[in-house]
Length: 455
Ligand code: PMP
Image (tube, rainbow, N blue to C red):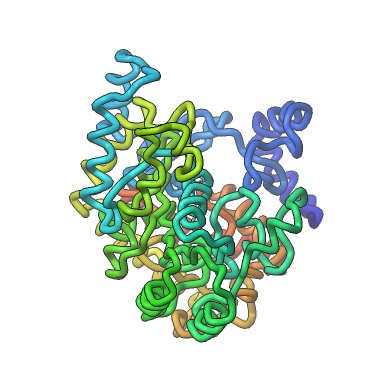
């Protein structure tokens, strides 16, 4: 990691003194002092005490407009009253019955009603688990082994998806993965249907194709129009299971997810985040004939050889179910998504205006799912953004802001805004005033970056 300029360290220590102390304690407990790969921060992470709506506060009482939004889980913002009420009521009824319950039926019904591919549903505990299950189902159903995926598409952290997640795309993002596992992964460049066609015609051992439908890593690499429909046709022609990873896009692009928004129905869908209203939870939804592999009723001995055994202590736990039902009831109206979409586009446009007015290099792009920031990149400019992004290629988009990304994030934090370094997401709780405040802050962020001599 690059060293942090002294001036940034000094400003942070002055503004966030309690977080600095807590980080020193955390370093003695957690590897690297953090509990999630993306929480390594420069100069140090800020510790949050509480949150409400579009905001969160740190231990020193500083308020931030939050563009993390629970890594995409909080469509309605922090602590939405309907979710707080549902979870509070449920906690008095019990958190784990070790048994079936009505809440899981209501929750599953919402998924079936909203998600076009959801003939059947099975709940798990996270996006990573949902992808694991979808791949297992595809392999079990087809009797084939290989998993085809696209460079830069993120699918969690289990073994099979560590290859192709970040450049260089032929090196896994983790050690500890057996070569035999990696040999089962075929990683192709995104948006190139000819390459998919060719790969499928050369290999009859492909069980599934998996992708984020709106584009790799939350549409950092947007999907080209027509690609999804062409992929659907190819999968049907080759009897390959098409899996949409809708962990982020599910219920966000539309109440029915990206598959409803783009009108392409996969065989299986991985869901999480918004699904559980901000509590842990995930699901696989899909074709009844594929999902039936999870049906262990009947002769257990025979089923061992013909079925997929899926336990999981917290599957469809009543708290996540209560939270999820409250969330999906509101998400089903489509209103939060439209508000978020409108504000996100306003923010993107406004940030490009700020870059232009300040003659700063870079651009901001995105869609209804969120915004992506490329500041300080001399090969990008704030006009014809969509076209530039379409031509840029996965490697370039991933290089993003390069080494200045953590400092852009730090500059935003000093302005009272917390966002992932190169992207962000709004919620229904964000207001026009929050967007305007962010745009005014962006001017000061650029000035600060110049003062720090990184822009
Ligand atoms: N797929 C996508 C598209 C994601 O964005 C994520 C998490 N950010 C995952 C899968 C993994 O989900 P989880 O963190 O719940 O395991």
